[in-house]
Image 1: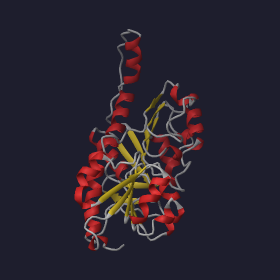
Image 2: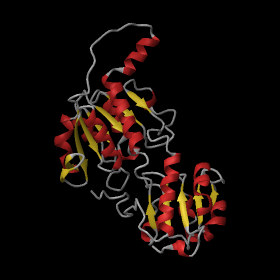
Image 3: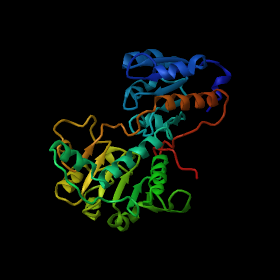
Length: 330
């Protein structure tokens, strides 16, 4: 990648946004360091992309950049304002020499807090209490404790690691699963390969999916995996909806193969009104907001990388475009 800032003190940045105005916090923070131009339609992006040296996909589910890619001849860096890059990672971008970065790290802590919230809600029977409250029923009973509960985390990236830290601090036993085995890992101890899932799932009280969506993870968790879980176990997904066979999950919930689920991501978003997940009593539906509270951190992160780009220094969070995520460098 060229140290492009040598030629322009305020490079043109094409922002794929939800409106034709750059995000307010990004605009105010970047200021005179770049010229931000935003587009929410193909026609708008076609008009601004030829002059751009950098493209930012702020509307991370948008496909606009792919449709206008032939006009991006001057772009040598694409930044996605999300941890997952499955939507913006189209074949021509993969094959190009353009550097791709993502927002890994921005969402880790909020998502770990969300996972802990859900586990606590299940352990302390919060959802049951809300039902009893609406019924004006006083149901005193014993509930569980977190200490000693076993969590199996699928995905050993930044989100999975922050989840592991947080759950470990409240006394849970944590195991991690990723593409390959790693011993003496600083966060998990041993990271198990995906091939060990069959051995690990029957022991877990909580299975937390924090996987990126790639060719290898699409539909990874299905009927066989749910059948291996304990009937008292819960499934939590903060990764990508398409990593899970949603029909198999619904069947497992209905048939009592697992005790419940907390879901922040779905195959189709927004979740269609006719989805059975809305009405299942043992499911908590969250509208893809586990990583919310992020705009300031996204803008600060981009500005840091922009300054690196302008001075020719290595960028942070460079995605391996073949793998579809930022490899862990521990």
